[in-house]
Image (cartoon, rainbow, N blue to C red; front, side, top):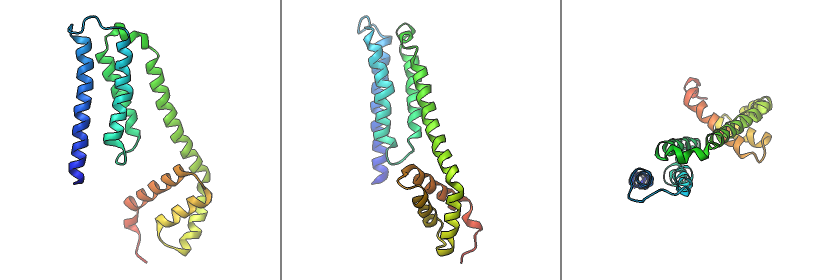
Length: 179
């Protein structure tokens, strides 16, 4: 049942994406619609930079993949807009690449800030982990408890600690002897 649902979402996303891309392509490349008004470029940019990433989020990314992929979808939408919209109408949006690069840099800056917060608390977290390790030998439990103690109400710190525990189990747990 789950596989059928996933295929259905991918199929729905593919159909909606192809409808958006082909309608925008035919708008600019054929003479059926007459002269294209200047406001059509704004609509096409809205389709490719807002609607397509929202479709990707709701149909594909939500609850399955990281939100980091949404940046790639936005960049792909910008690339599609660059190739679909004629240069005469696209030139009035010269500021758009700067906004996209700024938003991506802001997202990366947020991730670096979270890593900085974790690294500054790392000695205290390690001390708390070692204390808890003497009581309970379960790594995930100890890491989460240490994060809750020294990073209260920090959801992103807890998520980071859970990912760290996942990497620990995946890469280093095979070396440990069972108690």
